[in-house]
Amino acid sequence: MGIEYNNLRAYRKETGMTQEQTAEALGVSRQAVANWERGETLPDIENVIKLADIYGVTVDYLVRNITGMSDRAHDKKHMFGFSNIDKDGRITLPPKCREIFGLKTGDAVLVLGDEERGIALIKLGKAN
Image (tube, rainbow, N blue to C red; front, side, top):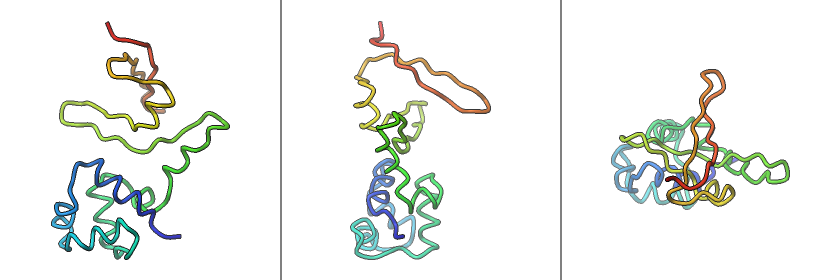
């Protein structure tokens, strides 16, 4: 099993980093990062660990196609990938999540939390 190259680019974009910034953080060339993202070469294990730290994910999520699990529509369960919380506490939901649940700009969602099981969002409709 190889690294899912689309994940490398997706996580970099999710963090708002450029290839140049990523390369600088790793001490490699921008071309090396571009080659990894295109699947032309593979980062060594040390750089995989550093990439996971930079992107705020585990090595497992970085190298496996775990986000590919979102195609389980037959049982109506989805894993959409990752979202980061910005400095103001905002979360950007992945496009596929917004599409499947019909979420649009201005929609209100209820945020529920269970300290043992995590957080859930429930679409309420248009905000007032």
